[in-house]
Length: 309
Image (cartoon, rainbow, N blue to C red; front, side):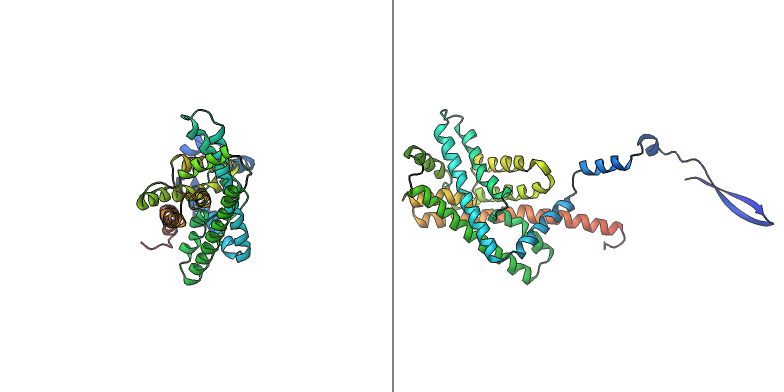
């Protein structure tokens, strides 16, 4: 705004009156005025900021931490059972796809089925909790929050494994599926048990990373949640990455048919995979995304004169 100071006299008293020149900036000349309806449409189509996504995930974690142990255990048990459908779907596709060269590209789509049931059904899966409940802990790093996170992790992990064992036991010791499909289960499950301890940890890191990223992406996808779940979990399967619950269904199936021992499951799969999933989910997603949002908040406070630099 350009203002000119003019001296005028009124009733014998001299005063200064600002004179405003017509305003015409480059922005007002180019950007049209929007109606209230158009502005609502702009807000609706805008991507949510990192802070909005962070707060959505963090509040989800807060709700999970407030749930009773029994509710957590039942939800987690259901999730462990549901993850069995990943093995079932993969086994069915492995059996009925005739071309071996294309088989991995198609049968790994079946891996997504268990995750679709768990995520859309709001069941408790351990690797999802590596980010949702870690954000409240990072926001309030006190003993009380830590104990609540440890309680939830323990309940969900144990109940997930119990559910995975039950569905693996049923598949191994019943005749629901004919021998040809059971052989396909063995072929699919064998892929979950490969490599030494360090290699399995790395496979677990990538799986935990991707699953935690899936949780981070879901609040910003609106109607595309199913697509995100399928794409992310498909890549986990196609890349041969190790997921502690989905992989436990596979390996526990091998335990139940006597192909491997419990020690092989515990130290050859469960321990390294669990380690990798926690590292991938916590360090690479929860901590880094929390640091991003914390830095953005600090910058906003600095601009408002409330930050310290």
